[in-house]
Amino acid sequence: MLVVALLACGSEVEGNAFVEPFDGVTGVASSTVLRVHLPALRLPEGEPVAPESLQVVDLDEGGFVEGTRTVEGTTVLFEPDGGWRPDTDYGWALIDAPDQARQPVLVLPEGLVGDALFSTRVGPRLLDAVLDGTDLCLLFSEEQPARILNLDIAGEDWFGTYWTPTFLASPGEGEGATAACFPVPARIGEGDVVR
Image (cartoon, rainbow, N blue to C red; front, side, top):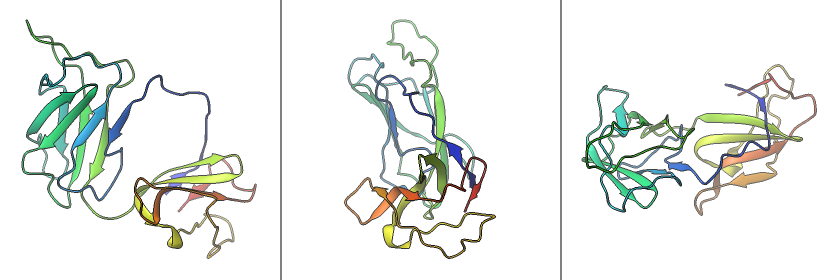
């Protein structure tokens, strides 16, 4: 369950920063490469990143995941040795590495030091829900078939009510969506619970 939050506009982060897989995604393939794009990263192409800059942790068994860390332009890549284990939760963090004499130094832009979670487990999760005008927009951890999307708003007598999405977003060419917006009655507001 998520509590609906109001969407705040105009607080855009400068530059294009993204990660793949995104925070909270499920069903990640074993061959997926972790990509962190940082527009302000200034290292020579192909220069290895200090191992302590990008830390990946197996959250099921504990301990760091061994793998290869490289830089392509302004993107930090991590490929795990032997691929990601099935049915496993992972976390990663990108941190400033300590300076080393005569070595390029990775300095992260303010606001981009942080962490994220992803999983090789298959099973959708609702990651976020926001009100955008009169639409309720939902973000899912993996692609959902558009034909089965349905909403249940706790505390209201709308059980079984089907709302047709006004917007669907999909990363691929499938018929599903990772994000969807639904027109909802004005009675739904900040603090209501979405299931």
